[in-house]
Length: 242
Image 1 (spheres, rainbow, N blue to C red):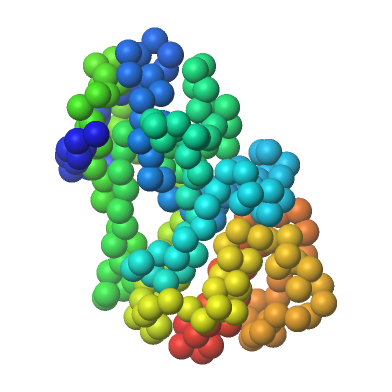
Image 2: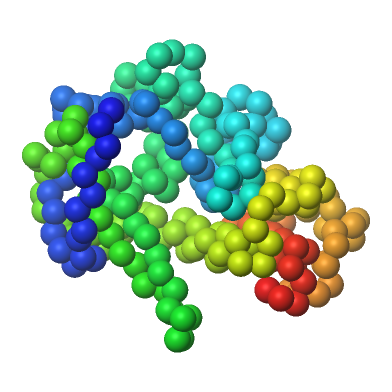
């Protein structure tokens, strides 16, 4: 497919878009994919499917080392066809719609963040992704970007993803390049395999465990555990420099 056009848009600017089975291009954005998944995305899929990380990894996700970050990145395994379809797309649509990745929820909006060097505040920047095949812009009510984000329930995922971006920025600044094999396994565990992380916490066998906030007391609050795991990984990799 040709490269999409990106059109800058403000958070309170309106745009028209609606997708669904009645749109001629329905499901086309779920093929020819090269879609990275955030740790939050993987967590939501695991919870929705009631699968361990090992099963998700075996059936639906591949891991590779990010060329710019040196950190483990999860990506969907394509269905075994020439169209490179998402493993969860069906003729009637997404079979894991309530747990779909944040990038799918945002579409056709793209989001980038920038941290101020003066006060550390994060600012958001948005663009519309206009692909030649997409007919969604021809229908539906107008709404602002801010309204679209609320309707797609993305704020929890974006907050976790922003913490991930902080970790990536710190890694690139303090330790560019790939991690040592053992540290790479720490990162896989912190990002994707919280069950194994909890086992190590229970046996007090994680490095730098006592240097920061104690682990969550609620074993079922996976969002808290994921946030704690990222903070722990910062300490384990960079110590007090983080």
